[in-house]
Image (cartoon, rainbow, N blue to C red; front, side):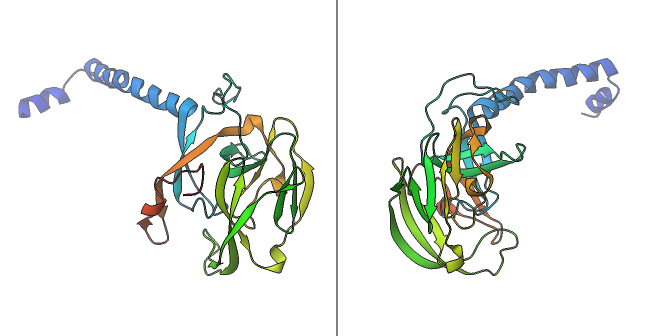
Length: 245
């Protein structure tokens, strides 16, 4: 063993370089496969804020399907295949229009050509009220930095949109009542809102998401970490984002 170590230490530089080259050749296919999967098929995404509560929590990790709505070239984001159409109610990861280097996650509310209006927090699409069912009233404690100790009276509803059923929350305070629109979604664009309707920076404030900014469709939660309690949220893991669960 000592002799082997001695020989390795005194191995010519050319031999050591050849070992590095061999390792590089071995790992390159693996790295290439990982790159191709992340670039074209699936990519993990961590939830940074509470704007999608109660569906998604701060610290959730979701798997994003990048090919369902069509493959795009990395970096330039040019479509190379035609995928299935985006549907109202889908949960989308996209590049924030005001800073494309930042990814956001919201729910698709309006499709191209739809007219969106909010009256006293009631959502209308093309002059039709989006149906929702009251679930409960509770004291909401916002998640994330700067929200420690806050308690807000809140109502939870089940809403149905585009065949999807999901839960939303709205603050039960007079100042939280909001009106918006009417606003017609332009071609090749999508109107986005968070499920935490009164705690979401979304299309009501900065406009629509162009089609070229789409990253992919969020499918399910594959891991969830509560940083405040230093614990795994087991009940959140495996949660589908295609409907109420």
